[in-house]
Image 1 (cartoon, rainbow, N blue to C red):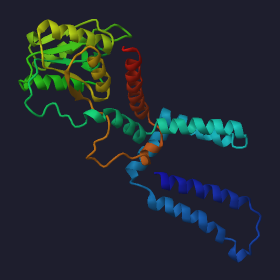
Image 2 (image 1 turned 120 degrees about the vertical axis):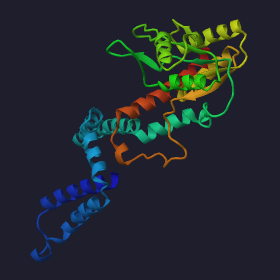
Image 3 (image 1 turned 180 degrees about the vertical axis):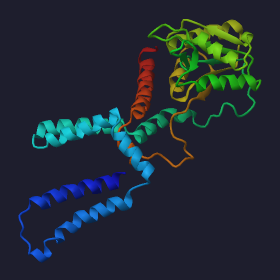
Image 4 (image 1 turned 45 degrees about the vertical axis):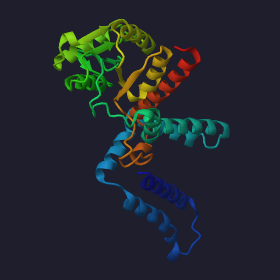
Length: 304
């Protein structure tokens, strides 16, 4: 979408200048300067993607992030003659454009997930005495029922490992900070609905952050005398979780779930086209990656 959009905007800008320019050419050749904007319009039409992509691009402009982006661009245009204000508005616009770019956010998140990209927990026959699942993959719906959340792949992966006969026990933990909802109870309920027997589930309620969960895991592992256990969490979260494990002298096999980065065997990451307009899901991806980077830094500096 970048080439047709730039071509169309350039054609409009040139046409406005030609309208204001006093006639200085003979009548027979006065039409010649208009060939340039016409050529740009033709270029825009020739490089325009499919009608579906075009419609999605237009629709993205009327979403909240698209409207904010257009407002920032309009602000840059209004302030174009005020150098200091223009530079400030331009910097803010560029920051929002990059942060909301889906290709850029995916690239950053891919780098965070990179150490675990080659792992496929459901491939193989490795056996674990227990599989621990960090909270965050489940929540409470508006109707009061337990439901999978944005990181629900954690629960699916653990359930699949149990059904494969590769672990006799699943350990659930977690607590939401905002409303104090016990995630371990919701996790257990969903596992039971997936055919996991109640006596194969161990709940660790009241653990609000990852550091507290890992600390409780260390106690459970020592109490049961387990030597080979697995740890399930989102791929982006695994580096911080493993760092906390090492702080407690734990060796838990990483079982990453919920990959949100790009597939290295796919077509690659695109930074333009539909990604040109900032998207809320891109901001969410970038926030996830930066949150983990800050979390890793905090663990290294404070040990917590």
